[in-house]
Length: 370
Image 1: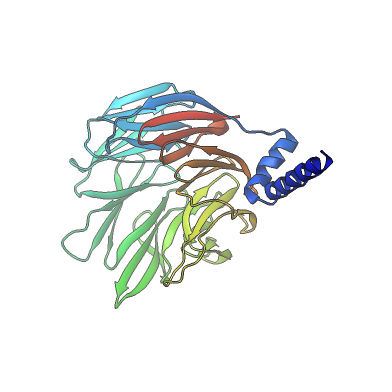
Image 2 (image 1 turned 90 degrees about the vertical axis):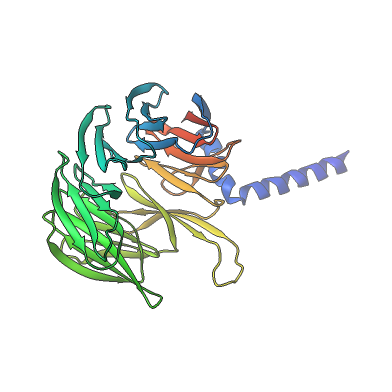
């Protein structure tokens, strides 16, 4: 009897050691110790037909759904806040904290909608629209489909939908862009491929469309750009992040692994990196998520995640998700919750107070993490 008890204690000790030294378990153990066990409650489940025409977009504190010509808005309690019948086939929808922009490609029309559901303007342009990028305020960047020449056309719309500047790019493809009324800037990242070599440029314009500065980015592709609240330009390259002041000098630069995706919270930047091995050399796939404050300091990191297909943030909460698992992380990169989903995840949207919108092919769910 004593022998069996001793064996049982040894097995229990081994199990505890394996649990403790598993990185995914540390956040869970910490939550048990501190009494912060996370639970998930279903608030809404909306069955969806199998259709590529259904779009889901986060807009500040609500989820937008475009389905069968109608744009719906749902709040965190699962209530439908409003709906608009737009009747557009295959629209493109973008948003920032205040506005929703819908491209009607058939009419070269852009529709601006307030987050209350009221339409603020409908603007018809004389050129077809390729893509748009909302600014951090009321201005909108518009990239037009290429003409039958080397020129690339972009426009900037003001808060009333009027074109305030038109820019002709004589060389290269526009890969990324940023517009800011507050900082009086339109910034384009263009790329030229010649003899198998990539040559990138950052071109700075004012809102009148006048060139202010041009600088080379070499073979680095810009993944994302934005202005912080101090007017510094944050540039996410493939393998580094730079903060650039109004004098075009680097405040700081952080070298990283190859950046796959980026998310922004109130107090920090979240970057996700995936290394699947290059050059025919088989390597162990390494996934990592880094959290960087606005001074360039890495304040958190997690390398225990499986392959992540998306990252989202609201205030300072962080959600990362794989094809079947949702992770809640804190600002240090520690896993606070790991939640399995039966269907294949298409998107997970983080909303206020740890509400999440979970989208699979079969349904839209709104859940609450407690």
